[in-house]
Image (cartoon, rainbow over all chains, first blue to last red; front, side):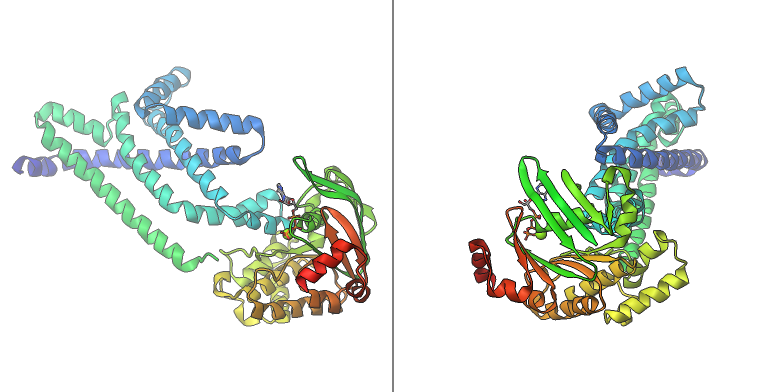
Length: 220
Length: 240
Ligand SMILES: Nc1ncnc2c1ncn2[C@@H]1O[C@H](COP(=O)(O)OP(=O)(O)OP(=O)(O)O)[C@@H](O)[C@H]1O
Ligand SMILES: [Mg+2]
């Protein structure tokens, strides 16, 4: 217990900084991943065979392989094509991974909106894309929030895997700290607490958002 | 106003509309009746091109509408539709439901759209509900908002697909009342309904559909008194 406290207190600057990297990495990769996910969810529901096929292959590959393998391939693959900073290589790898899961979440929530909403929009002279944007997506987003929140939490925790391609985010700095202080267990417990704290704060913000949306938007 | 010629539509191998011919004149109210699955909704949805037919022609206001060469969004602005299940936008207030298309499709400015929407809501008796969300309304109120929403685009034709079928019996009257008023104002209307009272009182013509065909049509008084086909008689005796 004493050592845990020691590590918590004495190394807090290193870990706080690393937690900042983790946060930045997570936010960046999830923002980009959301855009990727939204685009591929449209591909998935489109009747265009080419787009549909591309989306299926992308999602199938991501879901069918371990994240660590994807990170390694994307990281070294991208590094061989263009030079990225280490941060961007890691962030993009995570974005591509999360994008596939987010695509499925968006697709599911878009398809869960009653067909009648699209018909009502179209019958008023609105185009497909306008109805999508103004009628379907706002409802779908709201319905997707619990699953999105869940995926964001997974994304935050999974970002630890980029430590294995040399990034010093939270898990990466835990590995190097433990290697120098020989207090593996305690060090890992401390970073565990950091992750836990971040997830708890995020969950709290999410519940606030859900509450607010439930008040201002009602479903019929 | 609407001229349908030799309209055919299949879903897979199932022929749902078989060489339909139907003309609706300006200011006419045509009621379509028929058994479930006879193709009434499909016919209605073909008229505003929510459903694309396989063969035939639809002329609106003298113009042959060829889906491939036409901006169908523009056509739909002129053809309002009211659905059985209302399909109000649940994330928007009553007022926003009515203002949505005039602002974003027609480009009306907000103040003007609001003025118009409030006038329409007053017309359907729901001005005081303008700030609430649809889930706070009864079925009858929802359907009246849906009518106001369609009217906000100032359509030349209104299509109604069983507008009262999802309503509790005591709420049917208020919706039919609004439709009747609309008919009296000279709106061209095509109404699929099982409300024979409405057909008798308001329709200029009743059309009976059976298995994708129009079996017979006529003035309501004549139609209900002397149905010609055996199937029409059977259908009428079932629902009257
Ligand atoms: N999108 C579709 N795909 C396949 N079949 C369909 C589709 N829409 C309708 N049908 C079929 O076409 C037939 C006619 O349907 P339609 O909805 O036009 O009938 P209806 O006369 O409106 O019936 P109801 O009184 O039940 O509303 C039905 O057998 C129906 O199952
Ligand atoms: Mg129907």
